[in-house]
Length: 357
Image (cartoon, rainbow, N blue to C red; front, top):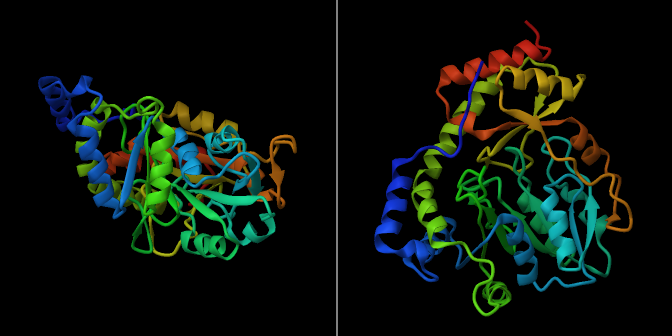
């Protein structure tokens, strides 16, 4: 039996940060050094002029849209397969989601559909990097500029990832990050938006100031995130190496096809590792793998079955529907384990999935 694969790790640096926050009293302050330090560190790491911390990655998507002045009655494009909070963030500001299909290889938004999705009311597009696959941000941003769309880049699953040598979250008008309890950078809750645009940052700050900052990240949360940022690049590299090792041992498994990035020269961060389940009962396969201790689950349900009262469907959602029914995701904590554990995971998967040899 494999596992358990606990998260977050018991980093002594995090414990030291908690102790320091207790010793200096910053844990109980409205305005202390940790939030300021984390804000500056994020900006430097990503090479952006403006970073704003907030209460969650889900709220950060809403805040990004408000910072872009997307308003009630506007339309926002997003993939028919995505995190459900993104759909709700659009609804929360009174805008209307417009659904397009995904690329069948990466399960990320297919830029070829943006033109067909546009109407006179369409203002923005949300694009997410999902399950260890990176969306083609260059193609998406080029298409968005051509059609006058603003771009929200959801990098909640991809801190430290790169596309064509550029950090994920810095391609669009606004980038979004999450520090939720399962994320690669975790404070239990929390999020951030980053942008090169001063007007976007200012509108976001004005919205948050409701007597005081109504949607903050706390000093204690910021304190535990700072040491994790230092370790992010090294841990991303370990995860990537283990993904290569795992996939090489599953290359002949006919029932499991890994998702692949659309973007050129992509360096994913692997919050999840996605697989298309082909020719097998997904629920049964998940049950078998979980019983062996493999930390795997179904992906998102997606939005392919949502009706016209809540959204406009711009194109056929064939691949988004397929993703909702067929995607599996391997959870990231196992990807920091030693090679022997990765091999044991591969053996467990091979025992349940159809493999040649």
